[in-house]
Amino acid sequence: MNIGYYPGCALHGSSNDYEQSVRACLGALGVQLCELDDWICCGATAAHSLNHKLAVALPARNLAIAERDGFAEMLAPCPMCSAQLIKASRAIAADSKLRDEMSDIVELKVQGRTQVVNLIQVLQKAGSEALRTKQVRALTEFKPACYYGCLLTRPPETLRFDDAEHPTSMETILRELGAAPVEWNYKTECCGAGMTMCNEQTVLELSHRILSDAAAHGANCLVVACPMCHVNLDMKQADVERRFGVVHNLPVFYLSDLVGLAFGLQESELGIDRHFVAASGLASRGQ
Amino acid sequence: MQAVQQENPVEQIAHTNVSHCYQCGKCSAGCPMGEHMDVLPNQLIRLVQLGRMDKAMRAQSIWLCVSCQTCSTRCPKSVDCAGIMDALRELAARSGNPASEQMRTVVFQQAFLDNIRRYGRLNELELIAWFKTKAFAKDFSVPLLFKDAMLGPKMIQRGKFHLKGEKVRDRDVVQRIFAKCAS
Image (cartoon, each protein chain N blue to C red):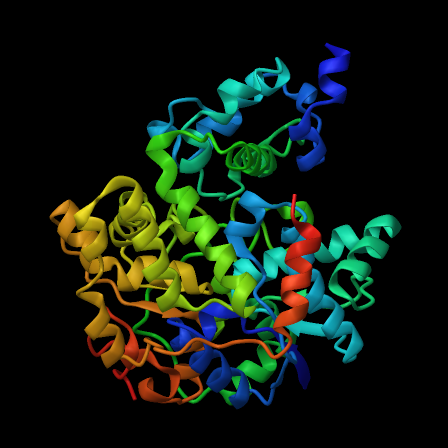
């Protein structure tokens, strides 16, 4: 299967462990990622906070390149990127005036035709049979709290994926691979997202609530599908522990890490050894 | 009242009808930042309904909002509260008079866009350096200057640190897009 691929800035920056994990996991499934030529940043929170026109135009340029190069489907593993791309795509597809205006601004014809998908959707599309065929190891020792955060499902009328209040798509995939996901309360609460740099107190407080609730419900790790969630819950976990005087010590995996481990990939192939909170033998156990 | 609503810049930017809000407060009840806000989301919408833009744009809460979209998702009247937050931020930043306590967030978002305008993709190291310099010039916070300094070596060790950022080939088109979107 060939699919368009929009990495976004985080996956080519400090979240390159996520790109490594996605590439290794999907590669094992036979999914070929074709990176979008000369893609530009989606604008993220800065654009939608400060300039509403730019918040459509920056994703529109990428959508236009995807259409020009014939991608019917494009994976954006970062939910910030995918949400911005989908939002722009729906607005452009629904409004001929906006379509003309954006085509003029981004200097390429854009119609909002490319379907932008997240990592979970690519795994769903591959299908449980393909996952089980590739599986060489049951994930029995993993009791993950599947954390969706905000932008995989919200706003629901735009993203049209899973249930905005009680999503279960990651649990379904991991359960099939032998893991025992826990029921918990914070799977759609915000971790503080892109405020890590300018408002750290917010990030530490919101992330502390998430980590605490996961631990209270018996999770031995968290699973995410977002680079920003991973930064706040993994890289910042030591700061959370210092700020609140607690020990969480909860490894945070990308969804592709656990699926990759089930396929028999090594920690180092998936980039798990580059996380901040050590997997403490959880990942290598049972091999 | 009708005249005020037709010219409401928040509705123009957010493409949502603030008069649909009947003040149930569900947006504020589910807001993860509610307990820290000076003006709650439903109160902000009320201010916009009344045309009290000056007060809404000066609220600290618009910069505390983490854009999690919970308010918009749960609104029984489909008022896009998160979109209203965006519109208020945009108008406040444009007016040059946002709440001074939240200038750091404004400076960060502006530095982020400036970075994208120049390279087309985010250069993390340069963004952090720019942000810290600009924020220091405003509030002289020494802790902010050294915040996360200890993370640097750990990121290098994990191959997560890039001295040189990526640039797109066609940076001219990026700059033209920014110019055409200038408000």
